[in-house]
Length: 140
Image (tube, rainbow, N blue to C red):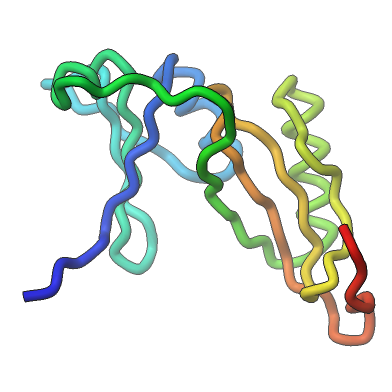
């Protein structure tokens, strides 16, 4: 019997701040009325994304502690066009979210940038570049 990976759980400090951040990426969470420190969102393709506060995770997983350093993971969001990556990066950083890397044309054929959510989780923003504009491979 093979398991099915269908859920990603992000641990957050401030559930409302995390929900507001991801709403800017058109990901909308429902807070569980029985567990106000837990929220979930069904994604296309059958995936489910959850947000749990550190307190909730600690109460359900004895011995769990919040990791240090970062970011330990990245969620990646695909956009229809390269200009959309630039616009979303500008919107998020103007709203006060930390940018890790400004938009750039990556050698693998994508317009790419990275920001941090309110808890330091990495969020990549990308769009495929038109074939004729893909840069040559270079050191980054």
